Image (cartoon, rainbow, N blue to C red; front, side, top):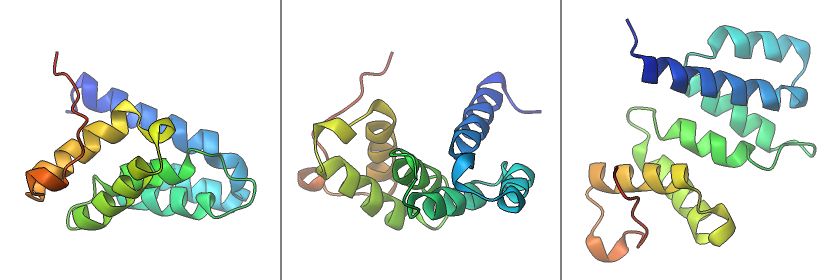
Length: 122
């Protein structure tokens, strides 16, 4: 049984997908709702939504977040998140920094190539 934190994370992911739903047809939305527990599928739909002209500005970032949870695609996720981080201060949100720190540890990124930001653990 999932922990309450896991349920909250899943709930947030579902809510974020639904916020982006206006960029999808009703058939695509049904697929999203069916597959919303799949991180890989979530990434694919956020990425697809980010390419549309009426896409929400956060869709590209959410696609990268979801990709960072996909086993075997950590390097690709790191590169996407890092490119967002390098865009400037406006993109440096706590979740982005947290996922980058996690991926830097997992991928053994050398210290001199890591982002200087660290989240304070409470």
